[in-house]
Amino acid sequence: MAMDFVGTACSESDDVTSAKYPAPVITEITPSEGLPSSVVTIKGSEFGSERAERIGRVYFGGVEATDYVSWTANEIKVRVPAKGQTGNITLWVHKNSVTSEGEFTCVPGAEILELSPATTFPGSTITLTGKNFAYFLQKGITAADVEVVFQAEEGTTSAKAATFDEETITVEVPMDARGGAVKVKLGELQTIDGPDLVLVGDLKINLLDFVAIYDAHNKKDTNENEMVKETVIENTKNGSYVIYEIVAPATGLFEPYLLAGTAKDESFLNVDMGNDLIELKNKTVDVTLTQDFIKGAWGDKNKYTFGPFLLREGKTYYLKVTFLQSGTTWVGNVHEIGMSLAANQDQPGAIVVDNTEALGYRLWENDFNSKFKTPFYDGWAEAPNYIKVENGYCEFYFNQAALDANPDRRMLKGCELTCGYKTTTAGWYGFRIFLPSKEVFPDNIGESIIAQLFNQGDKNCWAGHLSINNDKLVLSHRYALIDPTVGFVGNCEWGKWMSVVIYFKVGRNNKGRLKAWFGDDMQESKPVYDSGDCNFGFGNWIDDDTLDGEVSDENPVADAIGAKFGLYVATGGDRIIRFDDVKLLEGNPKGAFDIVRPK
Image (tube, rainbow, N blue to C red; front, side, top):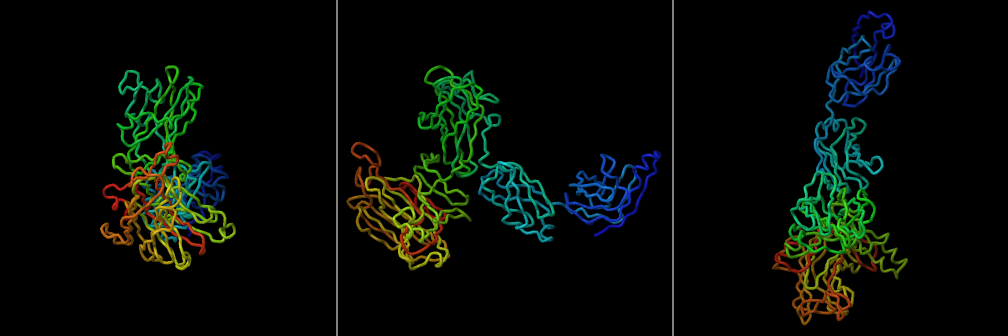
């Protein structure tokens, strides 16, 4: 909408200057309202052929604009200043001015006040809380119109908002995003700067910001010759170490790294982690975590990466750097210590740093609220079969045509996740499963194995498995490579999350036992299936209750029960199943049922 004007010309004592800059004339201003940074067009004449600093100025309610898109003799395009006020627009050309009669409405722009969580990881969902979003909703802006721009390795990357309301924007962080400033584009109406985002992959321990808990020169906790300076760790001797405290910002695999240099031969670096400070401080150096220190110069910044270590969000851990030398005195200098999210979150062999010692058990778990499968990784998932994490669950897909085209390829018989789970005595499984519909998981296709108690060792074959047999959930188990015992667990439902808990105890001479619970109202005293005393598991035994999990001359292959879950099938057609809240517990500690029971 155009606006009306009155002109006020100022007299010029300098006739040359007055001739060069006569009083401006405005014929139109559009639009009549705008957000901060939106473009306003002023048309007329005598604006000057181009804008010179302090010669041409535009004010919005008395607040001077700072961003001019273009300026010609007949047209000015200028952006509404961030703090512009509703009121008259005034144009000055040298000492002459013209002021609009009608007011220009400066619409309060949207602002991003907070980003939560401020530290996160690619694939997670963040919430941007702000104000003045209602105007944009009234203008028809929806989540599909809102774009959040993130810093990337080269340039930027962006994602559409998942939700948008009067106070918040939620968005999934792209996998190629990096930490740094975030921008939000609200359609074509406004682009605003948000707070900085810190991604786990960018997390660093900065020697200037962190205080070492222990600065142990030559294995002494207090000494006159401290190693940690403002920008470097130096004066390191064989056996000296430094320890830092870290709170994990997310659950995942992390890789500590050092930028370091040495001028000495036979120098080594060791990085270890734990959640018990005193235990880690006194722990014997783990040689598997030691790397050769490349000889060069003290100021070299060669990168040494260790791990990966599995950490859990919100828990406190300690990182210990130990310096080792087999020849001379000094070891080397460290110029930076950092820790990055591992690029491969599905890799096996992670060092699980948890509270196993304190709690007396080890739990492998994931609620799949991130994009990562950690601590689980693909046992196999050969395309077109797939395993993917989305919407807070893990989905498994089996393609029948691919197997039919290559029936001898075992890797096409499904897709499974596994982990380092291993027990020689007893264990528990807990998880939820979801069958989307009978179209994608028919109820008449025979057996679909969805979880295995896999007997690792001499026989290396399943000792038990949980299956969906048409419309029934069943638990099968055996103690040798013979026909199994099959127990009924429950009737499956489609389009509904179903909770499952399984307990097993290995044993020979009728010392084994299996139990199962199913449904929403589980009570430990009321399993839906109980095998009673039975034989379960096979291989070499230490006694009737314990498989031999140690390698020796008498036992060349260790025996234990491992874990797999997903889909393992042969016939019956394509199918999809989803898992959530997976917990695999080694052993049978007190309260095990409540530890693994889906919440």
